[in-house]
Amino acid sequence: MSGSQIDAKEEFVHKLFGEDYLYQIPQFQRPFSWTEENFVDLIDDLIDAYSTNTERYGCLLKDNGSFYQHRKENYEPYFLGSIILNRGTDTGKRYDIIDGQQRLTSISILLCVLRDRIEHEGWASSLDDFVQEEENFAKGIEGQVRLRIRDRDQPFFEDNVLNRGATIDVRDPQDGNTEPEENILQAVKTFVERLSEWEGDSNDLESLAAFLAQRVIMVRITTDSLSSAFRLFNVTNARGMPLNNADLLKSENLSYINKDERDEYQHKWEDMEEEVGNEGLERFIGYMRHILVKERSRKSIYDEFSEVFVEKPEYRGKNFVDELEQVFDIHRERVYSAELNSSEVSKNVYYHNLVTVMRDFYPSDEWVVSLIEFDKQFEDEELLYEFTKRIERRLTVDWLTGSSHSDRYTRVYRILRKMERSEHAEDVVNSDLLKSSADDRGSFENALNLRNFYRKGNYQWPKYILMRLNMERYDNRNVKIQYGENINVEHILPRNPATGYWTQRFSDELEREKWTNRLGNLVLLDGRKNYKASNRPFPKKYETYFAEKQNDFAITNELSRHDSWTPTKLKSRHKQLVGECIDIWIEPIAEPTVS
Image (cartoon, rainbow, N blue to C red; front, side, top):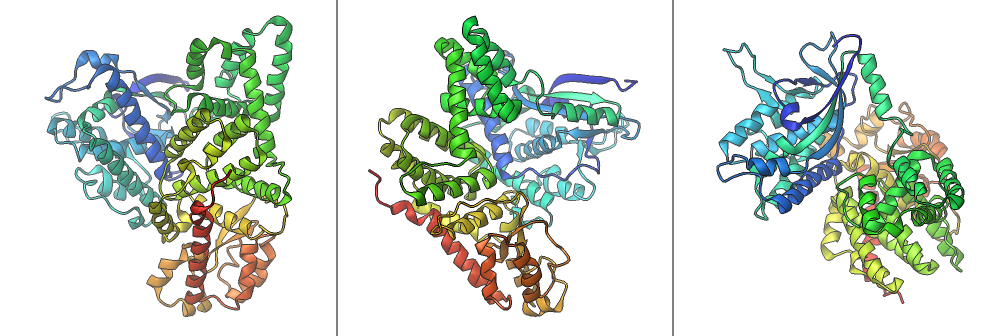
């Protein structure tokens, strides 16, 4: 290529991990940052796509490991997104990955996990060839790995993933010394657990590997100019990209409305679009899709609605726009404004504060879908209040005990189907789907006691839990709380103590490391962190740092009762906060039935 030419092509995994491609992560890129939730979603989606094809066309491989060629051609490919590569004068034989490193790294780890567990030697060797080329003297090829991640992480990546047999002994993610190392180990652990569970149902790892290699596809976009690669990255990730699902559905539905009413419905659509933007409106269309289909997506939103329109032609046109407007309005009132219209002021305030915390700090939106549909179907203020409390409780426990975004949506789909079948809102509110089991308590408590709680959920766990604990401290004040945009989680005992005050009181280094990142050592601050202040003695740190920045955080104000910070006080506070969490999210499962 010359003159910053761009080449784009659909490539299957066996091609992208073939001899034509060697990759490297440029040093300016962020480290490997996918977490457990991403890995679960990836492997579950691949297994789901494979299983759908198998049910339709039969197993992909013969007993000897070779393909049924006609079945392979019939299998519907699974699209894994696009990658952007740069091959300029400075990259040597390797492509710089400008966009797609998280997926390519995760696929490499999955290939290694499959390689180390497949009994068929031919398939195991083939998968090993995908991740590292063996030295070939006749061809003059040196042995090398297919993907080089950041230099500082590469030795760990090779020792724990790429080398054959490296993933057989599954290590605890907490054994990693850095966040990328933890994420690499978490990927191995997640893939092994998910595959073991799936294989236990008499499924075949070789056939899944064959599907991954031959029927999983990505769009490979290549340029020979770094500046051109960055422009491509910005364009493909830009907001308001033309001809997205919202644009396509707008055109299709307006075209089915009579001319004398089309202007009215076009204004409805564009009013919503102006309020939240094109991408925002696509999010609301996604809510409609979840409510209507009630199962995980296997196609684009546009393709799924196209199928719905064939089965229910009356849904297309005015009915589609009217329902979108209803979803939009409910969201504005119940989620964006967080308003409840109960006769009890205390309920209105509690609902506002709870939904505000969920809206701003819960990491995903499956709860929004269930809340919208409950309000749309039942229109009961008192029971909406109860439902919101119980769905938050159930999904928070699910989240902290390891359920992925996909798992939590699966629960919400079951709740949506329960709503569809129920004549009375009470049947939904009192459903077992919203209750915790006895096993949940132990798993939830273990999650709260993790040594690296500060870093879990990509730092989302501690902020959400602390925000909810803080919110409960305002329960009896009937005050609607507003939060700033720059809320941080701070350590009381600093992570790297550099003064005698801290090292004297926390002299046992192993014990200090054990407790530094636990829940009991964390507080909330409103505003930017002040790293210079973090090592001051506790009384001075509170006076000039916590007290100054605590704003409305009662959970931070409580530190004023302490004149020092010691291991005993840290452990006591930790035990207290864990107990409060149990009371908030677990204990109420025995509450009376709503009637």
